[in-house]
Image (cartoon, rainbow, N blue to C red; front, top):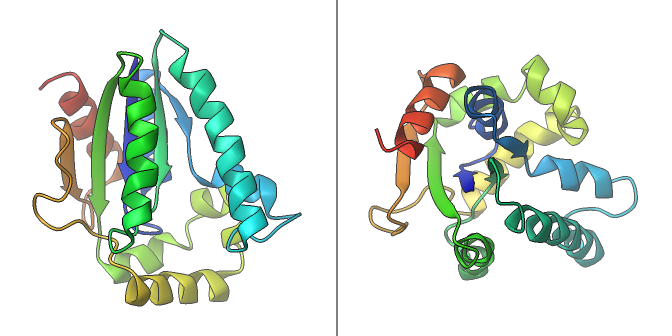
Length: 187
């Protein structure tokens, strides 16, 4: 089984590329907003109860996925590299899959802020992420988060053997997914 982690800043294209990768590979996409948007009607994600509930739900899914020996899964995640606990969190997820003998692949998508602000308004994003439909708020969040956290890895920071970094500012999602799929298959 294959577990692929796609990381990058908000609106870099993680979900959209993940959808294309799902189409190419048959692996199932579990994008980060599937749990965030499930919890938001009850608790804000930024509050301790909301974050804890999101993590509990994700961990239940990850446990079930790790027991699955067939196919593969794709998970998307905004990684604040400036926060040490974020590395601990995402590495813990990867370790859960590696401990079961599954292949773990890491992909980092990068795009400039102007492109991410444009992507923040796409129909696909808004259809799949209800919390992003308040465009003014989500644009401020993209800008503020980028000022508060480092959302792009430093060279050599991700040391996993199966790591791919893609600059996607001018790369369509289907091309990015094809590059990732080639990488996963060893190409």
